[in-house]
Image 1 (cartoon, chains in turn orange, cyan):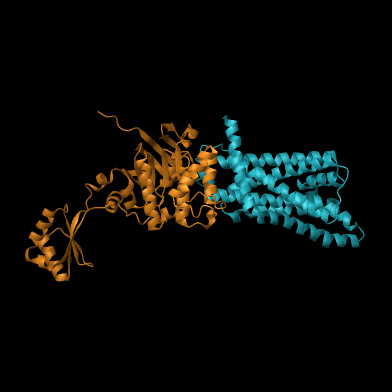
Image 2 (spheres, helix red, strand yellow):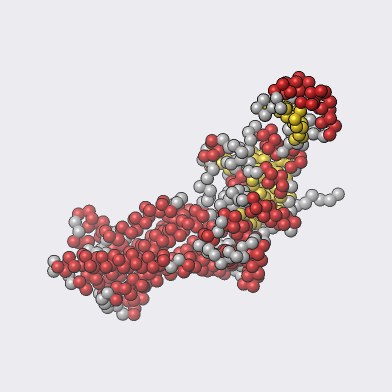
Length: 323
Length: 260
């Protein structure tokens, strides 16, 4: 039997509070080497605090953090040699040019002049920053700034990368580009720990998703595992008038009625057989149906089912904690 | 390479970065020379004329009296620029990036301090040059000039290390106004423009005992007359003490959690 892949990141019973506010309440999380873990949660859930602890910026109140096999609390220096971090706010030097920012990283990584130059040129090309390379970063757009930020993280060729909401505030094109870069990094064997508020992003990129809510991991699994067994798959029937809606509701029973959109949602696994069964039960009323559509659960359904609130609307208290 | 060699290399990298900021935006350097020169012209032009019209002192003698105070004000102005630049690093998040990298932790602040020292000493040299063009005739020999450079460097070091924790602690650039106000106003209530014994009451006591007065008196003694060894000792003690206080406070701030 093959051994499971080694762990790139492992946290045990991680706790952190600021004053009386408990931010992380006993987090156990493992990330296999070469995989992508998406930590998903609304604003104020504690995602950034998690990244700050694992990237040696802050210490937890209690618990254990191993990154690349090194203890992040006892030996932060060893962890720093392995990791790269791109935070929520672009950590770039606005007064320097793009090239100078990248060269600064190369110098701090103690690369030789030739090797540093080679990597800087390569990264400028890879992130489409060649034209802007000699301009001060203060003139860059938000998307360019974020690309430069990630490029700076990659100068040291890190094996474990933390990305804290890498696409928040990016236009769709920059977002696609960021996703592509993340996929390329993973193909090269890099481990990625990603935080996001966007379910489609986690779904598109992650091998595993952990849902963080109010300082606790409320679910942890592959996107498919999370979606499975969550109620949400249904056949949706739309009608042209209330009479049709009434008739169909009587015929089916147990359907969920939306008065405003004149639709009925019938719980179902969404397969062809199930759809035919629904239409058969309708009998002649089926002629009243304007449109039939099949919905499978997405991560929004998962999140709602597990936390009792949708991702998009953080509570007022959570908003206050957003820096 | 040894740890020490790495630390030196990182500090050099950070110093180059800060100096590049100065060279990229030379207006900072220009302003840090122009402001003290304006003050010099203002004091010699307005108050100097008043004092010579009262027969108290000649114009050129007053110029000689004021220059050491202007040197101190140049250093004070330079330190507020330093505080702003450290604050920018801290609020823009690049310090957080540096802290997740395997670099010598002290290099970030060392880079700022070393480049601030270079930048402010250049400003002071330019200000002294303007004063000489205006008719300032220092009597110092080479040894005393060296001592002037040494005392000025110590003063800049003290003000810079004080600027570092203020820059780290302030959450916005506006939060620095307290520091800027204190370092830029304090020289006015010292021996910079009027001897403290000509002041009255509590102002006189304050002017005689605040740190800038012995530093100014020492510079004045070195530039234009006999230096007072006792005053020089007090001046050096203040500089070393303030540097140490600023350094220790900065270290505490730099090591604590950045997620305020």
